[in-house]
Length: 210
Ligand code: VGL
Ligand code: ZN
Image (spheres, rainbow, N blue to C red):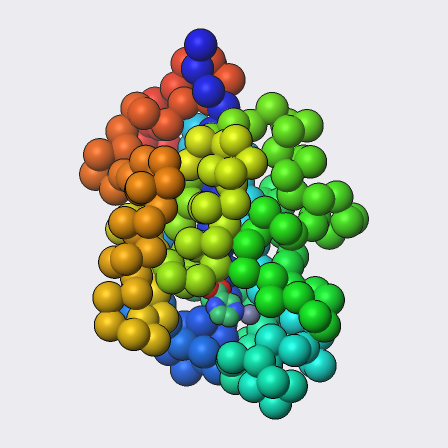
């Protein structure tokens, strides 16, 4: 029986890209890599989720309040928007996280939809059991999301050519990838994903040239 998969784009936001408040090196290149997956999943009519870091102005996650990070992705600000080069289909389901002042919100699995439905509840309701995960940052939100998804019983494929890390310490991203694999994540790249992406048992339509 085929498993039902969905794409989850993690935190592809302005503040995590060069010029933003908490930039991931080459974050803008990750946006372009994500676009190729978005196109693929869209053509195959697979569900697409995009998580966003969505902090209140006063978050204990921020340095000014004793946390680890410069202020970033504050609700309603330009830095919190999805990167302008990211091509999200209009039916993308947005998952917000880190919305409580006490909440770091690293994991999209703790996020909620725009009408407040917990993401994990929605995944189960949609009978999705595999997440293809890319985005920012490999060593924080991608890592935490993947580990929690695996723990919750979902299959996970990490899109290794569409992630980028903060690397506060050199090698953090590499170690995060190794940890995710060790915890049960599969990995793929755009070149090798091919027909492995299947959902619903429906035949995969070939796109014509028109
Ligand atoms: C993230 C640090 C702080 C992330 C979010 O999206 O990986 N990293 N907040
Ligand atoms: Zn954050």
